[in-house]
Amino acid sequence: MALEWSPGSWRGLPALQQPIYPDVGALRAALQDLSELPPLVTSWEVASLKSQLASAAAGKCFVLQAGDCAERFADCSSKRITNQIKILLQMSLVLVQGSKKPVVRIGRFAGQYAKPRSADFETVDGVELASYRGDLINRNEPTVEGRTPDPQLLLRGYERAALTLNFIRALVKGGFADLHHPEYWDLDWTRHSPQADEYHRLLRSITDSLRFMENILGAPAGGSDRIDFFTSHEALHLGYEEAQTRRVPHRPGWFNLSTHFPWVGIRTASPDGAHVEYMRGIDNPIGVKVGLATKPEDLLRLAKILNPANEPGRLTLIHRFGAERIREGLGRLVETVRGEGLEVLWMCDPMHGNTRTTADGYKTRSFAEIESELEQAFEIHGACGSILGGVHIELTGENVTECIGGARGLSEADLHRAYESEVDPRLNYEQSLELALLVADKLGRG
Ligand code: PEP
Ligand code: CO
Image (cartoon, rainbow, N blue to C red):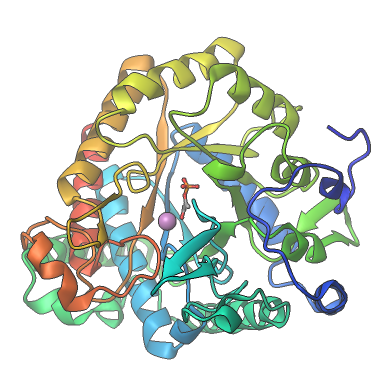
């Protein structure tokens, strides 16, 4: 590990999952352009999220981190963005009602454009091609040209992130997230889905309580019209992250101002790797994915490197084991954290340990396994005396058929109907709400 940190000190260490650009001069020019463009988020928003994550670690609020596995540039549209915001608002409403606590919303959006891949190459029709690594890096079309990393896409990604965030901020500021008007968030299904009745019952109870409060106060309940969304993405392409790492005038330190909450994926979380080196020097709250491959001694090293001051809210551990392995893996990580008195926020990602491929070649996940991993996560944390402070979900506000199961009983035979994801399978809007009802139920009992 380098002694002196700088936004570029990661360059001296092994950096996994980085694309190889044929024209290094063009890459350098694109990163230079990026480093001169304005930031997407501000350091005070970042600091506010850090203190909210510290509250979540203490069990005072609950975090919903959710969104696409990979955003596509083509999905940067009014309908897609509003549908994503609607499902997040609906889920958080359900969670607030169940947990009786504030919910912190973090989207996997406005920057979730780069994907780690298990294989660098794939063979399509007998031709060996570089893998698609997300719209920030190359194109999904299976041609040599399409798969060649293009540095201009880094700038297109920054612009799409800015457009997305601009629209979300305007929606929120304009009253779209106002609790007095949950009807703004209706998706088509709100009339005819298996969860519709339960959702509307919850909605009525919340709006009734709000009106009751306001009658007593004689004034609008503070903040019910101002709901925050924070952004997050996997900090994968280190050049892109470095170019958006800045100092600010009235606060010490360095901030990644491309997002509020960057996280390190499981494939790049080695304590000796370039990603961890980059993350240690920024002042944002950060996440690290952990799973079966994470040894307790690695976890200790990671915590020392990434949070040497043991600052609450700084480090979130997002665990992803799979329904069949969580019992074997989670307890020992929780014990390690407790034994050393480490301040961490625990979040459960019940998606990434439960991915499999069907005989027809579809990547899918079963709702039952996702539900089972979440239930076990609550149980194991409860038994170890630690707090599960959030969930990390891959979902979409669209009516896709990518995960099987749920109240509508989607089967493998349904997958071809509306399978859109170019990477991991996401819960559709009904399955997402069903999952929120389930988590709300757990939180309500806890
Ligand atoms: C992801 O969150 O999309 C992802 C790739 O997760 P992980 O690093 O846990 O595999
Ligand atoms: Co994913």
